[in-house]
Length: 264
Image (tube, rainbow, N blue to C red):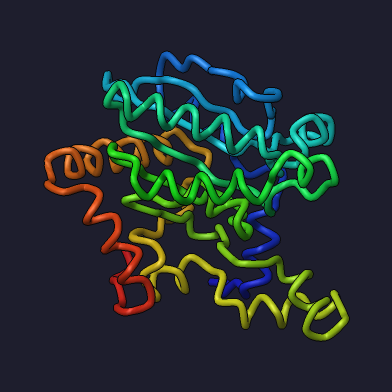
């Protein structure tokens, strides 16, 4: 069996053939109704969200969508959300809290969109508001990193009660290329940077950043989506039956780095 290096996993996470956010929504949930717009500026196609059923249970589902073809990826800014994308996500999460629906997020982004317009419209503030509001959102939240988990762009949808990662997903404060350019002034050292960033799912599990690493043996197959559907159903039942959800969420983030978890 070939052992993948951290940078091999980065390349795998970026593969255009890998299932995207809409693939998970369409194959795990039923009756998906997409909702659009942030009610302030525009609708960001890099963030897809709405209402759906999970085994008959109403949920709010939000995904960062990259697309597969070059045309799709350009239309969705290669999965790099603008401020209005994060504000749309927050609007849907607040709505979910109001109507007592759990929130499920699928994260796959190299980072928030870098552009003058995004900065002018408050990119940093939009991300910060999501971090703050998700910490106090009084409804269960599960976030799954299915590809790239880049910087604050990914974290803005990952302040959750449970955070899972696919086996070949990555989660990092910066891309390996960006890190190499800063530390060594040479993006060609990205593989070395990836090894030092501890960005793999196994690294995240070891340091209690995530609760579960999902194997990719059957990725894209019906059994793969059925397995995730089953895990989501069971996890939501546990979260909804527990007490003091917000305290447990706060404690979860306080424990990051303090203990190790078993591989699941």
